[in-house]
Image 1 (tube, protein in one colour):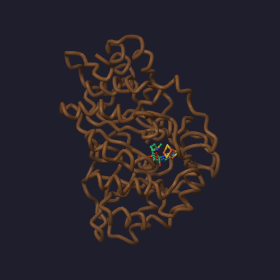
Image 2 (cartoon, helix red, strand yellow):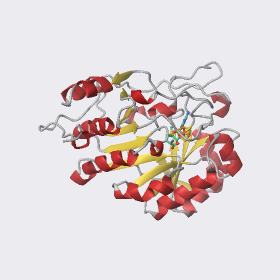
Image 3 (cartoon, helix red, strand yellow):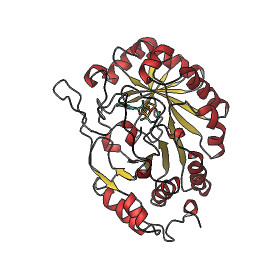
Length: 345
Ligand code: SAM
Ligand code: SF4
């Protein structure tokens, strides 16, 4: 038996429920901290990445994900860094697809910058992936270069087309950045809806030291995004949910959906069903808190999953009620010192 086919315990362990009664049904797994882009709000220009030896192997990541599935996780999101830059990452998707086949897992999904999608879209579909998130902050090639520093806009657009052609449902995500992409909110919605994609906007979060503009100068509240979109579209509240934190509205003129993720202005913690695991096996019970639990130790200590389950259980009992994000002029340091590329989006 290899690690990919490692079986969960025979008796199904109890589902994971935190002290506030929230069931943990959604796990986001960052499979690498590396990326081919250096987005200004996410990374410093010269990032120091983790030594490769610190990373969990794909087999270990598969085992870790499977332990969460055994404990009731219904949705797995593979993220990063750029997940499709991890060597042989399709082996992980292939291994996890067995949980879709068994019906224990409801959704296996991905957040990507799109640069490698043309290469992998069909294989993702073959592994049971049905919906993906692609980050696209701008339709303007020059602005894209300024924002991502190293990104190739045309390549991302080709990747999005390939994903649609392969039959994937695509949701575009844009971080709303004051004075940067404000004038593009309406065109981004049109672009997405013309191609049958949802369009979601995200408030910038104070994660990690970045060079370039201060957070307070980047930050744009979602109320402002809604106001801009409301002038161009008739937005109607809808009940649609995807298990994540986005709230959706329908633009009546296009019939498409617009999502809003508001970690800063609207505290969505009361319904939080998520935890995050980094590529080194560190479990973060909350994106906006420093508290974490090491799962790599228990993973490596024994081939049996008992230690791993015990570590996960103990950690979930420490899941905090909510995050402590602050962006204001008085608060210069990031609320959380790690970068978004560590814990993934
Ligand atoms: N590389 C992939 C991508 O860009 O989609 C996946 C990882 S990336 C860290 C996930 C998401 O986090 C992206 O949509 C990105 O725009 C967003 N993100 C990164 N840093 C952020 C920040 N400080 N505040 C809000 N969103 C951020
Ligand atoms: Fe890379 Fe995604 Fe971070 Fe941009 S947001 S630097 S694409 S990990």
